[in-house]
Image (tube, rainbow, N blue to C red):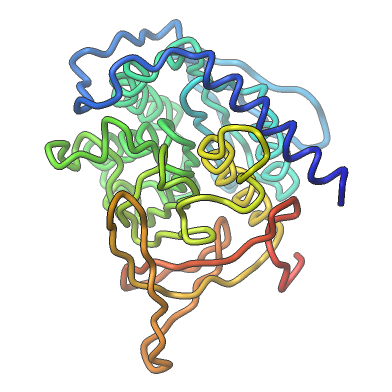
Length: 321
């Protein structure tokens, strides 16, 4: 237990140092894609097609990849001040590969150093991703996109582009503690941020609504982990609890790839900058949903809460696959 807790502290220290050393810029004004400065040379697509090898393929914007129509594809888009070598990206990629999926990691780290510009860049980044998918002739119904922080909005813009350019939609978008700053403002319309219609199934995982993460339920399914405001194990450890809570979304999602747990339906209101969730207690209407990557298709949108442990493994295991 001590080693697990120590690992959690070290991880939070690493993430906090990485974010605190990066440049935030203006994080209070609305996102403005007209100020984007991202270019094609700052984006790479890293393709992993086989869990049995360590090989991968790097492609630039404008290049294409050939993937069999029968293959399920998972696209990972990192967030602000991140890169493909981070622990959570590698673990997520490996978990997806272990299930036989083709994995595409989008590297836009050179355009994500400054939060303000990174936020302004996500629309163009999403267009690059959407164009890559269409130009490669990938089976869109087989694609699920996972976006963390700012990457969640880029995933949304990729979904918007595909919906506009084809008669199809991406199967699912998983938004991991979707970036709130510059996006969760009344003057920011849905076309400038992640929205419920960007895929057939848009799923949000909220872990840091107190500071970095989006508070409002804007998906078909919204999971508020431990209520969504702050995470156990991130308080009183001598590091930035908000950053620790923010990155927790990535790790609980990774665990959900192989572990099935249930979340309980709640109603959500935002008060004084925090999420307040109230259980739906009527047994005739209350629902549960499978958390994370294995979420089932729900007809009616809903918000759900689940409790986790303070250290890894975070999920309370009910069924191990």
